[in-house]
Image (cartoon, rainbow, N blue to C red; front, side):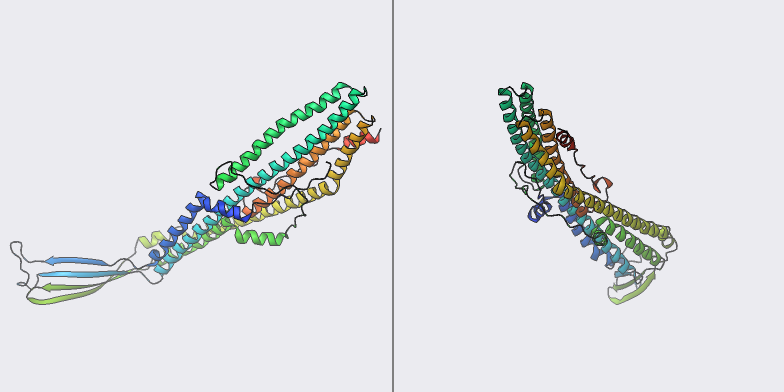
Length: 419
């Protein structure tokens, strides 16, 4: 009854996360955007379409002179634009970077979907763990109630002790309904993410001894974050794309060409042919294309630096929070829960022996249950920090949940020591 609880709460299994990702409309939308951008890459670097021209030249308005006049002809011409060397390659590189940006957005959608599932999974496991704790708490109050009844019937305790034990048991039913609602809500969220019926059963880990988590070295965590962060990849791709666009704008100052060939049949007269080369003169468009490109490249580069700094800060915050929570949980396991359980056991035994008032028993049992509840919440808090780190969130609200402070339960112990 007074066994110390350890929560082996785990993040959602891989099969469940894969199901969530496969069912997510946001992921499907991002995946479709990747395919759309991928299809644009070949077109961006392709040659411009050739132009076919058909025409007829006639010397008079009142009669067709084709075959009679040397100047009358039918023309069939084909023209092919040729961009300045390097322009097509740069346009393809810009489009390819758009594809990579879409792919980074897809990775962000996947991370967000997995994070939503993991958070709901942790909340579901926590609510179920608290329901198990509530069942243990009910057993404690039943034991205290039996002791109060025995002492009341023997004339050794007032009726208020018995009533207080009954009130506490009644309050547990209210807490049970609230916790069950939390569990049902988390289950419905998980099933919604999987596109399943809201009330479909889903197992979660039970409460058992859990090994201490191994915190990664900060250098490893920072390297992993910078490698996987979609926001950082988007920012760096934006800087690279701005540089490519600046290079392309510089190339736009050089003229494009067009080659053409034409055949001009003249009826009974010998046919004529024509070939030609035209050169565009980018007097105005080339100058406008380069306006502000240097400043844009500088802006995108600074934006990437800002994201990198923010990512480093969030990772550092989460590692600090994980270290604090791990230390907090070790104290719960190794000291606080042991002392709290011993205090509650001793208080209940001494009350049964008539050596303590019921108020001390009430404080001891309440403190013990509160310590176990705070321990579960602290374990869940550590998991939520891990979820935020896996998600690589840049949101400060998701960076570092505060460790759960131990609930003071030493007052009953001092009271017993003073007896």
